[in-house]
Length: 270
Image (cartoon, rainbow, N blue to C red; front, top):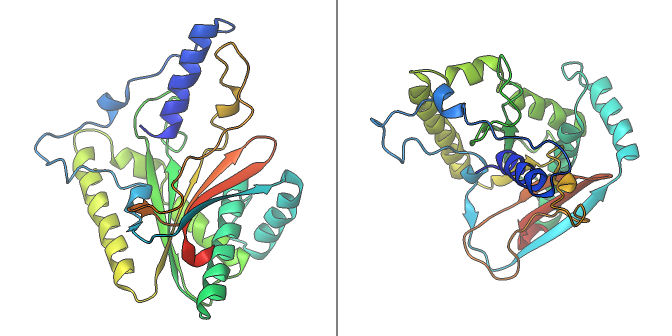
């Protein structure tokens, strides 16, 4: 279950247990909208979200946190908008993801001595992108992955914001509609194969590095209260130390009074 749906479940559970306010009931209409076809095998129907990123079996894996205050983000949003006419009103998540993308590329260069192209996957919740929008309480894995690449010369913030926006805006109302109804499952499988092909193509490129982004912002995780108070801390639980089959370079954005970025990264950019 993806985190948005998990947050709906936890908030409904908490409000029912605490009885302090009206409970938010999970909505289970998704299976009637996004219909599965038993004629396809399980492997063909596998959704490719952040999991498209190859895992790393390197011995050195670490997890870190970076706290970003809201005020310094405003100039970055203004800069991205002013220098990228095609990007109107970039969101905080877009700007932070683009900034971290740029910084991670710089880190790759610092450790290797050369510029390295990157392939990114960014999870996108498509509930609000559907026409009409799906209920916020809709249960299911209702997200897709925007993906793209950035070459060595494209390292400035406006360019990374523009590339990220270009990838994310492809997941729009028409995209979500194509996944619905009787023909939606076949389209889903077609898109899965397309993404796998893009990942395979990137993997075959010499020196291509992978970065996965996801945002937990505005999920209300810090407001979940079972009766003994709201959580003081919400974090991403990743792997550290010696670990096998860990997704490399995964960035998770979590908001509270500011935006926190957690990542699990292989040792080459520590």
